[in-house]
Image (cartoon, rainbow, N blue to C red; front, side, top):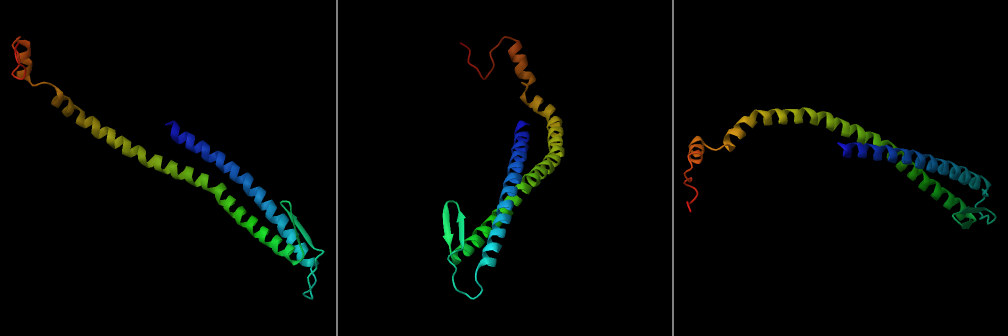
Length: 150
């Protein structure tokens, strides 16, 4: 009973973390898209390299034409991670609803099982009680045929 509740709570927590991560990566993707567009707009159109362009990311400095290439590459990576985080924020709700569907389907099955168990219960009780001949032998004080007299 507590395990499904714990799994739902973990799913809700993961869902919230997924929303936070999705917002973070979406903002990073948008920022990198603006930087990449700025670098592409500032690069010369005649094809000669402009080494005055610089792009800094995670403590690294990229210069020249490689700055725009690296900015586009990191923008695409951030876009991929934003997509993954979007799925991550949606999946806990899907999993929780699937678990709820399974629980709804298992309740009638459990009821059928308990009803069939209750129908078989009298048969199980009569099979486990000693036979009348054995009871009579035990009440007469004589040893049963299964045990030896000492």
